[in-house]
Amino acid sequence: MANVVTRFAPSPTGYLHLGHAHAALFAERAARIAGGLFLLRIEDIDHTRCRPEFEAAILEDLAWLGIEWDGPVRRQSDHFDDYRTGLASLNAMGLIYPCFCTRSDIAAAGNAPHGPDGALYPGICRALDAATRAARISRGAPYALRLDMSAAILRAGTLFWRDLDAGEIPARPYLFGDVVLARKDTPTSYHLSVTLDDDIQGITLVTRGEDLRAATHVHRLLQALLGLETPSYRFHRLMTDATGRRLAKRNRAETLRTLRESGTTSADVRQLAGFD
Ligand code: GLU
Image (cartoon, rainbow, N blue to C red; front, side, top):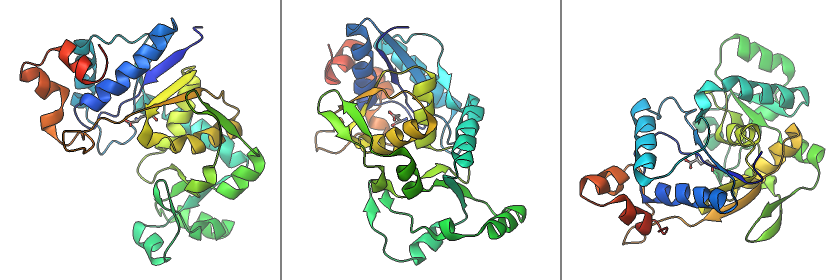
C-alpha cells in the first residue's frame, strides 16, 4: 500500500466549478509528490439532490482537466451496508438514539446554543424511554439517529488529530452536540459515511476545504469509537469570485463546463485554480 493516499470526494448535486478544480488538484498533487495514490469518491447519499448526469459530468470534467485517479471510483450509494454496520456498532455501545423531532419541534424548544452546523440539538428525544421509542417506531414515525455526544466523549476520552500545517489539534466534538448519524430520508449522514469511507479506502491524508475543517472534530471521535485509522489532515482555501463571494454550484455561469464552452483551456483552468 502506498504511504500517502488522498481522495477527492465531490457530491453530484451540480456541475463542478473552479473551487472543485482547486480541491481535486490539491488532493492529487499531495498524492503525486509523495508517490502515493489519489482516489475518487462520489458522495451521493442524498438521493433528493444527487443526479447521475452530474456524476457523469464530474468524471468528464476531471478527465478534461487531466486529473487521473487511481483504482475504481467508490460511490457511497453502493455502500449503505457499510454505514449500517457502523451504526450497529455504535448502537451496541448504547451511543445512538432515535430522534423523531421535526425542525419545528426543535425550534419550539427555544434558543439553543449554536455549533459549526447551526443550533445544537436540545436533546428532547435523548430523554425518551425505551417503551415510548418502540411504540413510535412501530407506529411508523420517521426518525433520525443521533449520537449521544456526552456519552460518546466519555467513552472515547481525550483525542487529538494532526493538521499537517497547524500541528496536533485537540478534538472538540462537543461543539456539534448530538449530531445526526443517520437522517430520516437516508440511512447515513455526511459525518458517518465520510469517516467510514476514508478508513475503508485507506486514506492517509484527508484534504478538504476550510469550510469543513470543524467537521474533523466529529470525525476524529467516530474514528475512536469505531476503532478506525486516523488520517492526517490538510485544509485548502475556498475560491471566490471577483466580489469575494464563494463559488457555488447553483451558479451555472461559474462551472468548469461553462468555462470550457466559452473557450477556456484546461491549462487556463488549472492556472485559475492555483495550479500550473
Ligand atoms: N463531499 C464533500 C463536499 O462535496 C467533501 C467530503 C469531505 O472532504 O469531507 O464538500
